[in-house]
Length: 193
Image (cartoon, rainbow, N blue to C red):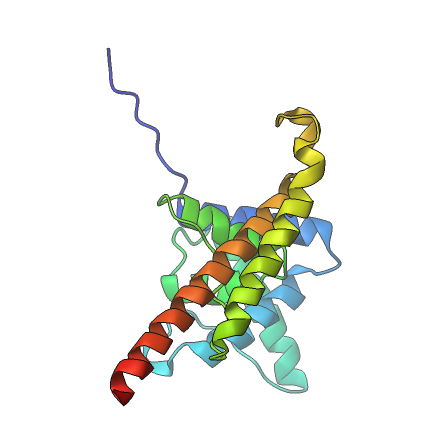
């Protein structure tokens, strides 16, 4: 029997699919989104490593920049430019509004068998981390309740899946925050000893 290979779609295909979904479902258009990507790209990518010619400006220059940036993004999405640079991918994904950004990050992480879970804030409140964990867990149980009311998961539970997934991610984030607070507490206690 032959080994059946299952190839993953290119990363940029995942990004473009979520972008198309966002553009179809929201009032955002290519031009507006392209300017958001350009602003984030120029703000987060060092000038000496930028690979893409995105622009901003004021007045007449702003109009030219908007047209340029929209054309650049369209060329990537329609396949004229074959490969999405990693530095632009970061700005692109970070510019997607929620829930499209989270969905895209989850799909990109899933390609490698990972989870995309937001990191909790680093506020140093150790007891609050435990309280947050319990609160998030309670919200997950509440989200699960209607889906497990009949004792099993089935197609009828599809309507609850997104909420359960989000609440599960929140629990994972709270666990990560608690682990960080524990580690910081242990390290600061050891330093003071």
